[in-house]
Length: 150
Image (cartoon, rainbow, N blue to C red):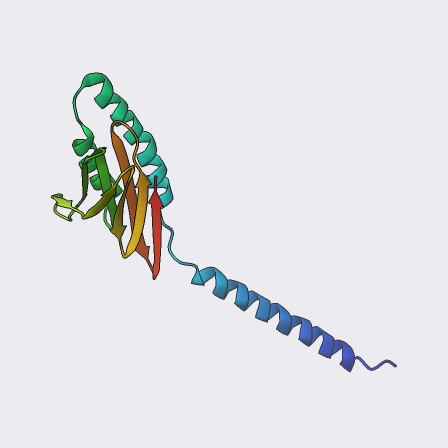
């Protein structure tokens, strides 16, 4: 009769390898950070801001500040959104605090470009003729900083 001890060792090794692979997969899956809506909000802000700028051009009314305030409320808690609006030489850079008040942000304006520093990172934007609208959306989740700009 054959000795079946070798088959038991082989079966035991397969079970141990399967357990190790299973635990590693579960650990890696559960280790992933939280999800961020920064990219989705960035795309939405690009689309909606272009429509507001078109409305401003056609109607002559400036609704940009109302729009940014509304969008900041819409984005919700945990999202930091910094805006740069205006024409070259007359740019306004700001964010909103938790109470909804407009807070100015320091900017560096040079010929044809403007930059702001958010969370120790400098973001530079090229200025165009007419009305400009730029933003930086950031969210800090579980040790990672998610950012979207236009």
